[in-house]
Image 1 (cartoon, helix red, strand yellow):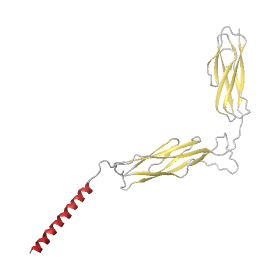
Image 2: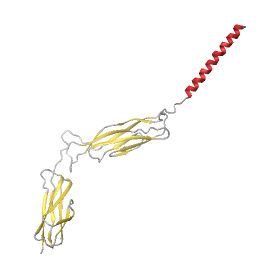
Image 3: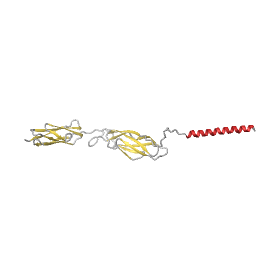
Image 4: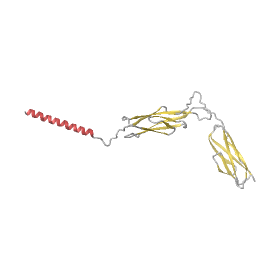
Length: 245
């Protein structure tokens, strides 16, 4: 009888210890650290570009003349693929910001069109939006735009200054720089006059010169053009006006 009582008592203690331990384990596993950072439901892992360099046509005038053995593509398109970790298939929207060009399409696969941009380095940044704990971290990559390696013909433009004629003392006279043809771009105009005052138009193709009542003789107006020109192009021309007494 004593042995049976002892056995039952030991069994009761063992059972109580196991139950207490299980409850402690349950309480411990249910505890959540309030400072822990929750894992986002979705986040961008990476973005990929199918190419990191595009070649645009030469900046020549008229027909572009590629160097021998050089191919000049006729487009500047890059395909973008955004890879996202999204274990719960949370509905997402994709946003793209570019420093040049435009984005065509939507979603995780779009086209970056750099047609019309100038040579240089451009960036694209991808981000996602959605309900819940969506990561706001972005991903950025860059692409280089360069001109095709071309031999560009160089032709000088013609430059003729017109206007002038006769002007009464105290009156005004107009001079015009006429530039035509050739391969000049980004032209600039710098005028000087032998007497009188340039009252408007400095830096443009046309100026107005004011005379005084004391002036006599002639006024010579000279323009010098700048910009991208062939090295041996004529850059200056003049015209005169006669002060009529």
